[in-house]
Structures are given as C-alpha cells and as structure tokens.
Image (tube, rainbow, N blue to C red; front, side, top):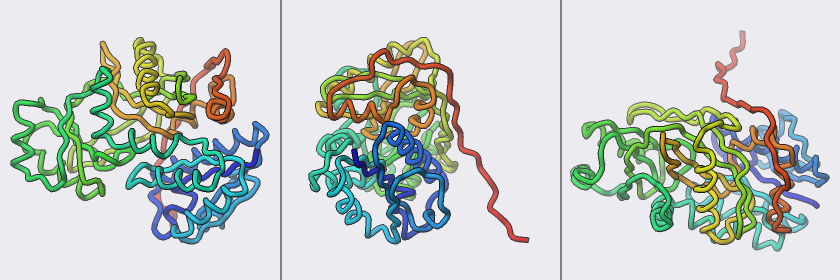
Amino acid sequence: MRLLIYEHVSGGGFADELIPSGVLSEGFAMLRTLISDFKAAGHYVTTTLDSRLAKLNPPIGADCIVPVFSSREIQAAIRKVSASADAAYVIAPETEGVLQSLVESVEQTGATSLNCPASIIGKVVDKTVLQASLKKLGVPTPETITFSVADGLEEIKRAIHGRLRFPLMFKPSNDVSCCGLSVVRNESQVAGAAGKIKRESSSKRFLVQEFIKGAAASVSLVSTGSDALSISLNRQDVTIGAPDAISSYNGGLVPFDHPLQPRAFAVAEKIVKSFRDLRGYVGVDLVLTEEEAVAIEVNPRLTTSYIGLRRVVNFNPAQAIVKAVLKREFPTNSQICGYAFFSKVETPPPTID
C-alpha cells in the first residue's frame, strides 16, 4: 500500500518555533521506527518533515519526504498526500485536539485511517471524561477531583480536605507526557501545583488524584475495534517532580517482568474493549502496586514504548496495526524474546571554538 506517516513534532507541527528536544527525541524515534517497519512489510511510505530537519538529511528511510516550512501548511499537506494514499497514520499529541483534528483531516480525504476514529479519540483523551468511564467500568483507578483553572486556591483546598489524602497528583485534564504534572505532599504546595498547570498547559481543567505508590508501567495493545490483544507490559522511567521542579518521561524497558502482568493485561483489555471502535495500536498507562494494576490513562495512538516493543516481538508490529484495522486480525503465536531498554541522553549544546 501507499502510506502517509505523519509525526507532529518532527513533521512540521513545530515549524514556526523551537522544537523542544525532549519531545523531538520521542517523536522522531517513533517516526523512524514506524517507517522502517512499514517499509519492511513492503509498503511505499511518504512522510512530512520540518524543513530544518530535512536539511540535515536524517536517516529516516521514507520513499518520499515532503518538507514543511510552516505549521500552517500541515493540514493542507496531510489532505494532499492522503488523497493519493491508500492509508495514513498520524502520531500526534492529544493537546488542544491536535490528534483528533489531524485524524479528521485524513478521514475527510477518503483515505483509510489506521488510527482510532476521531470520534473515539475525543472520548478517551480528556482525563476527566476518562476517569468517569473507568470508574463506571469498575477498574481500579485513583480517587479523583476535577477542578477548573479558574477555581480559587481556598476552593481547591476545601474540596480536597476530607476527600483525598496526601500525597496528591496534580495534572492537566488534556495534555501529554509530563506537562504540568506535580506530586504534592502537603497543603502548602497546592498553590505551586495549580500555578504550574497554568504555566505549562493550555487545559482549562485539571485533575487532583491520590498518589498511587508503585511501579509506573504501560500495556501496549492492538485492537480490532471490538476485541483487544495485549502485546507487552512496559516499564516507564518517569520523574515526577514537586511543583517547583521538572517532571519528565525519560525512557523505558520492554518487557517489564512483574508478577501482576496477567492482571495488567486483563485491566488494559477490559478498558480498550469498552470503547467500541478504539482500534489499531493503543497504550494504557498503569501503576502497579503490590496488589493491583491501577489504570491511569489511555493513549489512542502510537506510544514511545513502540521503539522498544518492535525489537523484542516475533512479528512486525506496524503490519499488525494494518491487519487489526483492515482485516480485524491479531498476530498469531506472538512471543517476546529478550529485552529492549531505551533512554534519553542529555547532551551539552554544541560550541564553536
């Protein structure tokens, strides 16, 4: 098939501004590995690339690269390439509806979208809506209160008092990675956490949750839209800072050997199956305590764990997405062999002597 693969960070979504190095490393890694796997499966791949990156001639492996000089060109470029493609896949953040909007653009061209439908994306990316769905489903999830960024400090403190126990997690209702995320250990840190969300996120609402002590993990799944198959349990290396510190995603390990793996798989599959038409690749974030797999978030798109997953499975995971979406088929006799560790490496800025 002729495929369009679009990754928002390296593909032109930040063409009018400086690209944050942390998310660029994740985005480009996902783009490069996904293209490699689709090429290995025999597909012809077109992608877009920020013109500044295109000048560097990075080893990306696409058959055709469309340079993007401004983020204002993105929607038109996606529609143009999608119109002549058989199918398209979008990797983008959920922030401000970016992922949903770009998938809608693909759907409007008539090309087959390998993503979850835009209508379903909207139901899972809003953490407030998702928490209500998870609670109704009966899966373990943190005790949560939702606030507006316009709520006053005393109002927030009163609502927390008597309902939640410190330490707490403060996080935006609609954002990705660790943007705006804080761990709050006492009431004196509440103001700083609320301020951090306002500074780092455009979300109008935020969640306050009881902090769950355990191992940060995720499950990578493929879904046909009616059934789901867990592929791997992944360890996530996440730094959760105080309100005056940085929170960051640093990398991960695939697979994650943990006694609660069967429970994590069961919880993740139950969640994904509950959202009809949630299809293709899906990631479910969890915290594994000593006794339970606690559901945190659902990612209706490729996640960074893919770059490790592809190294240890005995099938092509990109082609598995195609088969799950188009044929409603799962990989047969899937196995994991070995381990893949990936991590961000901080490098000093270059100097010219």
